[in-house]
Length: 338
Image 1 (cartoon, one colour):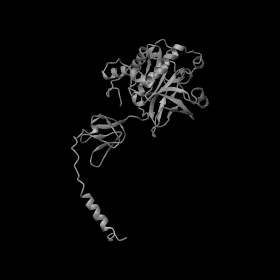
Image 2 (tube, helix red, strand yellow):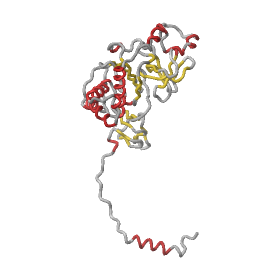
Image 3 (cartoon, rainbow, N blue to C red):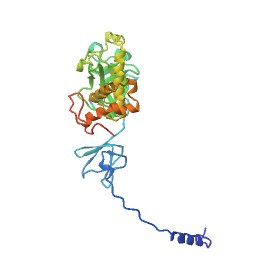
Image 4 (cartoon, rainbow, N blue to C red):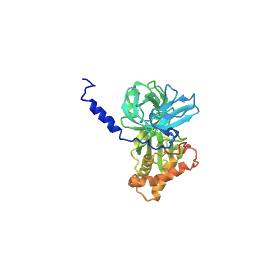
């Protein structure tokens, strides 16, 4: 096609004449705004201000020109020269020594597989549990045949992260009387990023509710059957003797105990909805506020009530209240993850 055909020249000339009648005005100057990277929360691809020679951590990427950008949406954390981004929402990434709560999903050869809200299922080896009566010996073929007497599918258990396999899977163990099978309670699931590392993850509230704060975001809530024994509340969880296992279902839960358990469970979900750090202190604050407001447990999670009952927990964290050992570590982000 001939671009310079006579039929198209008049159209181009008429377009140039039409543009000559317009007057282009420059837009008014807009004051420069501070860069969003100065805030603790960044989005993927956003530059992160860093000093020369800094170390790249998780959630960051170093470009060819030496600048650092975020690869996930989260909060910027700095430890000396190490710069990393903690995601606002992510699966549990375990550490050795963490107290976790899991659900058995598979019974295999010499091992159980448990869901711990991680990137992959964790592994509980047969050699990593206590035998009936606390017997110390090598596991035999007979023990393998009797594995379902300890844990079966959908059983809940508390355990501790012992190590990691080469593929990244967590290895658990229950070789302590405070760990073992869980029954007679309710499981509350919250964000793992809201769980704070405590000196004692087994906590008994003064109003008669026992809790296990799993670092993987699973919190076990049950009536206190120890009479407020505190640190010894979990003794006997891992007692797999026939007498203990037969006695567990016989414990009846009263109406008042059920209501207290439900109130604690809804307090956990309210804190999770408002993205507030979860600890015994914040749970107790929400629990007491719901009682003062006269709210039934079933009304605590209504949108108009969640903000009202969570405000005391925010004031505790925002005011830098000192907390006794074993209840809450200092929260460097003010308790809220945005």
